Length: 265
Length: 248
Image (cartoon, rainbow over all chains, first blue to last red; front, side, top):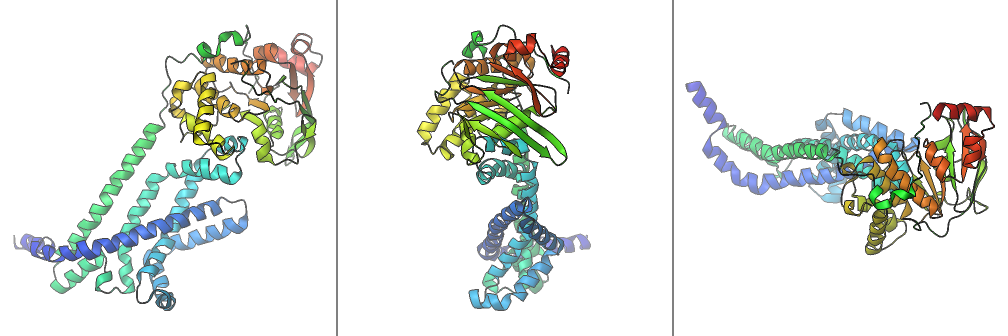
């Protein structure tokens, strides 16, 4: 019983949670959202550019995109954040002063861009070549056909994978604490960790975990919902009353004999 | 729907068109002549180059050599995107955009390429859908239509741009047999309305009854071309006789 009560007090101490809650709500949560949303936007834009470069016929676009993706997907997120956040710190100090957020967002965006680029690329490449041909046959240029027809379809197909990447981004935003945050810059994890360090009780850290779950679990279910909707949207239902249009176009227009002769395939 | 074709149909001439994919010579000097407002049906075995020939006419594939003329003028130096607005094309697999409604499939090019207002584009699109008997399906997604309905939407989409020539690439080959007649009826009506058309088809009955010219292709060349009666009733070329004996 002693062990159980010790464990309970370590992780579920109401007083510790109540003490950390206001700061998590007013400081940690907004900062986590700023980091995650900014990096998601920048990472998605970068990912789209990488995806388009990755399918380009020009190797001078394709190869750099490949190398970039291999590097930023292959490095541990913590290493990238430290390399950029610390390595570029002197430059960051000149531009933004003592604020590690821009470099943290940059690092998170560069990482997310590599993953999202691969997600978008696979989606775009999954769109049938006939769609591009159909658009080009209407008189659209390659760029217009990609922008209006191919990319919207490709992105739609990989929405679940893209949302998964956003979930990973929310969690990875906790790594920005490596860059040294002042009190008002701390995100959820750092606040929880600080309370845990000063009180010796892990309840505030558990509370931070609960905040992450509140952010990520609905997104996980959103992924499933989107996936389900897209699958249902692809179902084909044929109108049983379809007469092939004869009633309206007038069967008299048709030749009296329409023998079907298919050649050998 | 007779009379829906544009009044600006043009003649079409394909002259000695060659095309190779690497060592594979797909077209080896193909010729085709279609009078203004005429319909040419292109028949032949699989792999003979019929669909590739169509794609060189609207330059979805650029020919290596030869010429394509509309009303006697070469189009090979024209802007290919502008050319494709003059030469509509309907595909075997419809190639409708599945993420858009039927209406938007038709208005997209009207809005973005023709730069029409939304009201004007919608009016034209609805009128075209009315003509192919699908006005009630304007807000449906293509996936919720039958194959025959999708193909009629594809025809309406191409016609909305008021092309001078229409190309049909095996437009009924992917359809269930009971849906073929409706699409052929639309095509026959379009032909009767004076649209210049090139129709790659396996429907010999359609070719016999609707075409002004039937061209038989084999190994990348047009081996025989003439009026349907001459092609079907008195075929001179031995390869054509062999082909017809297999498909009729």
